[in-house]
Length: 61
Image 1 (spheres, rainbow, N blue to C red):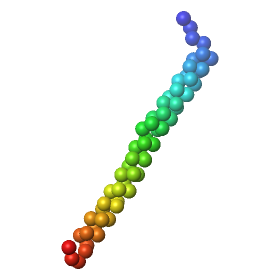
Image 2 (tube, rainbow, N blue to C red):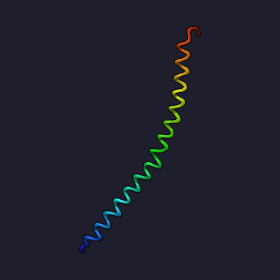
Image 3 (cartoon, rainbow, N blue to C red):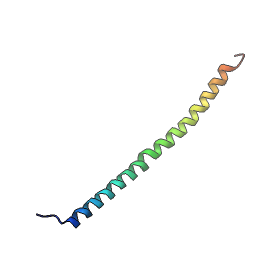
Image 4 (cartoon, rainbow, N blue to C red):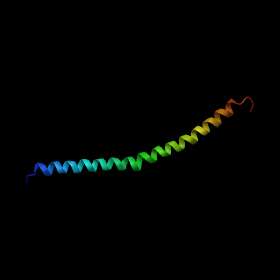
């Protein structure tokens, strides 16, 4: 069984396209929610940090 060079290059292009789609889905379903979660959590952590710093720096308790 011989594979024609045209068929082989078409297979490679299809495979590269599938890999690109997989990476796009990975970014969409994993990285974007992770960044959103870290951003949301970071805002709360910064708020808590500032409140704690303010409490420690008060001259009287």
